[in-house]
Image 1 (cartoon, rainbow, N blue to C red):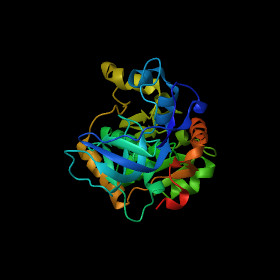
Image 2: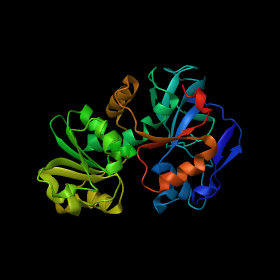
Image 3: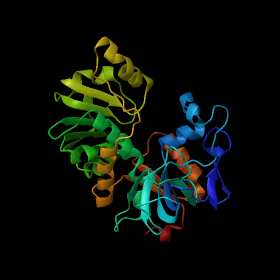
Image 4: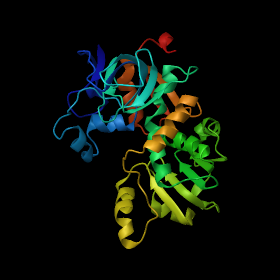
Length: 323
């Protein structure tokens, strides 16, 4: 089978297409024929080995696995022993950060992974970016206990995580202010926020509104910048940044609990809610571009710019088969 592989850490050019053995499912696993995948910030971190902490998970000196890819959409090709709930032919999408391997024509993963069935009216390309941004956004919203009536501001609302956070916040009944650049205004407005702020024309930190949650989905602002925007019990979080992580861990020691960071944990109830939104079609990922598999390195280069709007999808099959 074809796969995008790399045998060392480095820039996008370390990735190349190669023929590798097709995997077989073990007990408790699914073998999935991957029809579409994505390139996201998580993939870039695993590929480059930066920040350095990533290497504790992926290999200190060289990568433990050659095939990257954390997100996919495809068809169940084979079911391993002891698996209930799935059968060959099921159209599914999912998230496989623990095992990686989605940048290939076939993928094996634990049947207990974050997996959803693809709605009948959604293509594989549309379904592939359903889980990466949404599960990060879900973790933050659950940690912040966002509920109906809360006022939420999302900075970086045109990105994968930000666009997911807008939609999930609206599903929870929150009043949502989305912040993005001029070129993304129309697309972000289509996600259903109550208002959209163009940060290139207006300083979103100078408004009079106060929020129960300010979420920086791109890691480009700070608690110090946004603190005055919070309600007395309001919270701040960012999707990345050591300053946010440090404050989230050590803030409670000095009685400052206003910065939170969604460290990974298994949230069965939240995952059921998220997969329900995906399967019903209520959550629709924002997509910037679909690349052919042969141009996956170009997708990595685009992801590295930090300027993409939504997700970068990789067409593993021919484009006319993405149905």
